[in-house]
Length: 208
Image (cartoon, rainbow, N blue to C red):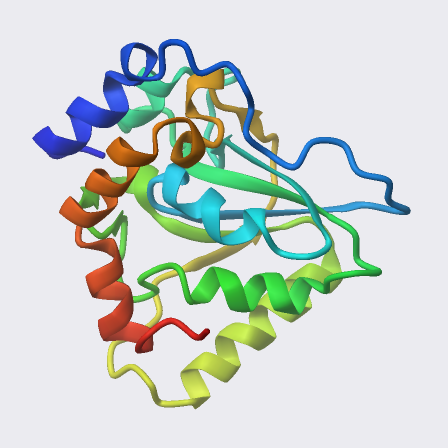
């Protein structure tokens, strides 16, 4: 969120989110064995929303991963000096939703052709990446990328990284479920950033 518009909405988050204390997520749900999936696709505000309502997803948390600084702040990550990417961590019940489905949702909500940027946000901190937690996730991630390449949908190479997961640092509370806490500002940011317009160019109209 490097552009002026983005800086106004994202960097001013504490003020904009004043009074919004509810986390806005699904909260605790009865579940069996749970697993984690970690993805980066630009602004984490926009990546929470597609996963939040999926059956089998217990929670979605915005945060930072893939860098070298412990306990980074939003200001540090957005400066591009920590090596971290804005990311989300999805806690899900594999008995209700598979990792392959999560990968499909991930791909259809990013621009896989963009290197070190997503939509209007530029810099390594806005790179797209799949951070796999185990070898099965690694295998499925590579398979999904190969299938996408084989589909010949895109002429350009896919820039999305597939790398091992490291420590995930949850972002500040005002970033969590921002789309629910501040729906008008979130919608304006998303529209101004051209995210949905570009996603339609890449993937066609969203499925109903």
